[in-house]
Image (cartoon, rainbow over all chains, first blue to last red; front, side):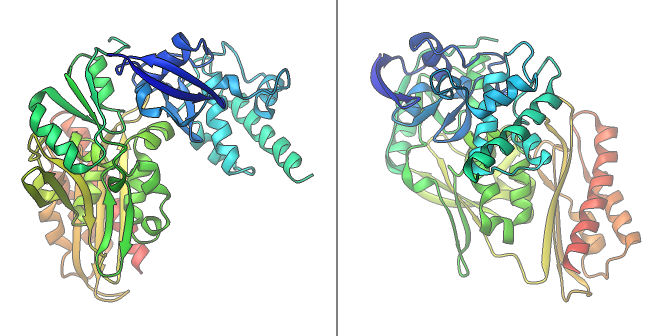
Length: 160
Length: 289
């Protein structure tokens, strides 16, 4: 039986009637049309469905939507301000850290969770933070460079 | 594998009492959902199709990490692997547990998966059980009729099998203070797959009578090398009561490898057990001195 629930996605409130067995990734993509979140392996190995729940990287393919009603859900669509890209998105573009793009939303969100806590990460810390996001186009070096560059840019912005 | 779930009735108990009453009412038709990183995969594979889903993660008194000098460490069953790995008291006093929790899955999985779920799943290759074995952990199991404390050593009875009864819920993991002049560590080797599953895991807790003294007690536990997580008691005997040296460590590692009962890749698992026990005991010994 459907239940009415309120979801807070990228600071917008949505009241939806959903089945309890619906996954968060289905609600985001099919009910809200937020297709930036990718549905890939379905078993928590690839990280393509990563979203932030209360700031923490979480797998939308292994989360029942009802269990995150009322929580702060961030998807890739919530990062840019209008046409101004988030610094992480900007450095991903500048460093060519995107090839097919399928892993990119999850990579960017895992990177955001790291940089929100630590604006001066080591390369090792970046690798650890991204270890749950697989890239099949073998773009890891550029991705790591992009995250380190974003950290530098954001830290300059925070302490000019 | 299907990527979507079959329908079920959803329940969200707010207390432990309410949760175990539901478990007792629905019996085998119900499954407990916490982090979801294991159960939802089994459901997509159609290995289980519960009629009732009992989501317990909103029960407030199951998500905690408490420490006191008298009572030792108490971890709520809903504490996530990230919360345990990031806890300063655990990093300071029970660092082998923080290490094992940081090894599990990926950052996303660690943010979601609970230690209670990891224990109750009882997969032979899981990382926290060997550590809980050497730390002498006890598990608090609550049912509608009352509660019991089960030493972690008696909890696992086979691959994916535990003594947990249908209407019982694991609520807390209790860990006593480590003895003075002791140290521990957790080491592992993995299979090379997307999420590196542990091939051999070794936990050690060693106590000396003084910083350069005799080994008064040692516990060595291994994961993924037998149907359940196991203690290597004969290997412990090689070291207990002795002044540790490299020759004794090698001997104990050899004995430990002989105690393993791998279900597959036996030769490789035994070789890795010998290597990892040797490394783990040596590292622990150096930590104390």
